[in-house]
Length: 214
Length: 214
Image 1 (cartoon, rainbow over the protein chains, first blue to last red):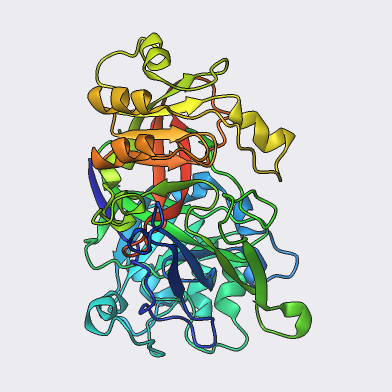
Image 2 (image 1 turned 45 degrees about the vertical axis):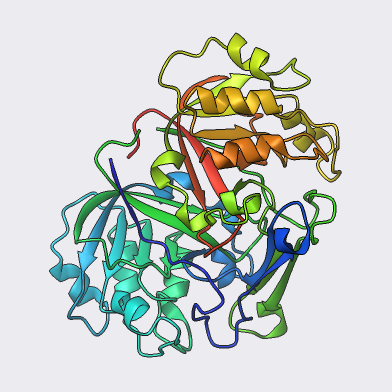
């Protein structure tokens, strides 16, 4: 079993979506100050780093993150190469030539290089899924889509049709992945978001597994 | 594949360790107030709900949670029945008659009932692992131990020898599980903590899997 961690490491320098609260991590107990243990608190958006969006993020009567199906977030996945793409539309998705039965798709783009090249800066010009790409995903039975920047949708899209199309169809959106170490191909995905009641999203740890689990 | 979620659902009513900051979850964007999306922030201890302790929690030069081995947190596990036990010591562990090769052990006790019977109240008299139980765990090659209340160690233990023994030996401590739906037996455990840089602990989503993954 080989495990590839595709999650971002969260610290206060990680870029956040413009307008979101800053990531604050601070010790409230510290052995160096005479406490018995070190213990820290965190304050941040639930859409920090690698995270999932729940339907409630865009749909006022949508379900919260604790209702997302674990069986959708655990299972076989294709990491697809969009290295040269400026956007992920129906045309680019069709060109992958995916076989039948693909239910989980992670889109590896030039975004993954940003985590190494400019880790602290938010970039507006990231590669994202277009509205017609979202419709293609829904029509082809994909139940989970993952992207390697902080949104599945281009910056400042108004209306946010990519999100709405995916979330209305019950597709799990996994954002903020680092796919730099994940060569295109097939894996087992395990994506486990923090279980926060009634939340519009939650940080997630996501890994790819090669070989048999256990 | 059957998935049993053994993670607590986090909300502001979940009990926190005495002295820890309260769990605060609030929307900073709300569709009902005219925003395009719903988005929430959270503020809480990194030892909230189901979580792992990193060595840094008790050892000033210990590693942070991002350094915990994923291969320790993914793999075969035994859920052991301590229903009648007042504490988990070497004697109780020996009585399990575990076969060789058990590397992950989850201790199901009467604590799991507390999540249903008195979900909002912190209880000081939870069942925990004694210092000689911790030594037994280390000596028997167990690399991950999970418990069904907010600490592996009895309340107000001073010095906290159970934690220190486990963390010095590199045993991953998984706390705050709800094992009420997990019958004693063998499973595949997947425990994925949030990847927070240099943190003394982190919330984790943990599941048990029956059958083949994927």
